[in-house]
Image (cartoon, rainbow, N blue to C red):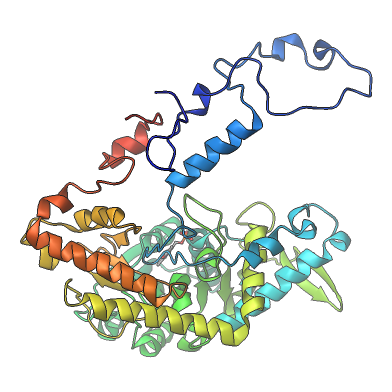
Amino acid sequence: MPAGIGRSGLILEEGLIFERGSPGRIGYSLPPMDVPEKEIDDLIPPSLQRAGIPGFPEVSEIEVVRHFVRLSQWNYSIAGGLYPLGSCTMKYNPRVNERVARLSGFSEVHPLQPEELSQGALFLMYELERYLAEISGLDRVTLQPAAGAQGELTGMMMIRAYHTARGNPRRVVLVPDSAHGTNPSSSALSGYLVQALPSTDRGLIDPARVEKFMNEEVAAIMITNPNTLGLFEEEIHRICGIVHSRGGLVYGDGANLNAILGIARPGDMGFDVLHMNLHKTFSTPHGGGGPGAGPVAVRAILAPFLPVPAVKREGKRFRLDYDLPESIGRVRAFHANFAVLVRAYAYICSLGAAGLKHISQMATLNANYLRTQLGSSFHIPFDRLCKHEFVATDKNQQGMGIKTLDIAKRLMDKGFHPPTIYFPLIVPGALMIEPTESESKETLDQFISAMKEIAEEAKSDPSQITSAPHLTKVSRLDEVRAAREPVLRWKQ
Ligand SMILES: *Cc1c(COP(=O)(O)O)cnc(C)c1O
């Protein structure tokens, strides 16, 4: 196939970059040398030189630009349309955040630069810490962890350090069965046995069960509130009280913080530790593995164990404090994914307290609008007021041979990224839908129409759905094989 020839409207086909170009073509032109030329052999010993790179593309600048722009057009993104991926919070990332993160004073600062020359960056980190402490209702914050999962590990290591300092690290961590998989993983990596807590038939944690499981061997409970079903843990205060009364601590998975900003604070509910996913709640582009940031807020009793260095204020100056004898140490190189911190800071400053609260109200309103509109076509197992997301299932369509995966694939034909599917694990055939506050009513209505069309097709023409998607570049892949043996070449 001749690469790069348009064949389907203006979404152009694209071969491999290795198939482009022509020998000798290059993508740059440099002015003539104004210093003496040196032989390459004088600079790099011939034994270390490569004769050439077999098949190396020799392409012009515009060929490179077009290649990557075309590939990017095959991708789906939040800038392209609704991305209702539950729990992931694929919300709009305001462009002003990008503008600020690219200011040269931020983008060119080096982590080893002397503190006197990094005062602006340190000030930003200090202020962001204070903002996140205020939002979470806790006392201190580390910005170091690179993502939520690493924040969990950091938090659990601090919990272990806390118990160890009091004479016994304890053995067990309680994790509800609706939890994200990273919760049991971080507990296990921190040396704890995981005890699963079954949810009630209302999708919540049962305080009586916590009471039953809670003893002096339990180091902590990990709770996501609102939980992964989008439901607020109504008994959170009591549950925290039970855990605290036996000397345990309460870890908060803050991935769903975008539902309660400025409305309720985890610290006030009784949480002792909370990680926040800046790339979810505080608007950093994410997906495909990063970048992210997972700051962890803690109550004062855990502050001695925070990672080093901490940003400290001394009068008008800021410095990095490495003098924390009980610290768990560093959890990553340097200070954080700094550009993500800058975006979060810009986001918080540009919205202010009232703006943050409005976000959570709108996210909740949007989710409840979708829930009530879709309830006539899809089974909604916990059909009551939810927070920023809710879970539907394929139960009404199963009789027609349609599964959750089919519904997700068919949605692509209708121009929407599918929601999260088959999570949380406690709901068979889950479709976990999070519209976020970014979306207009018109967009939500289009999504509702698409979902309802699928529910109708399930009755009238189910094979349309089970063979979907029909309008994507590739249809159903063997997903495991596609990951292990990727075929990158575009074929008709
Ligand atoms: C996303 C998520 C995590 C993990 O966070 P990462 O930033 O992806 O590492 C943990 N718990 C819940 C509920 C999540 O949605």
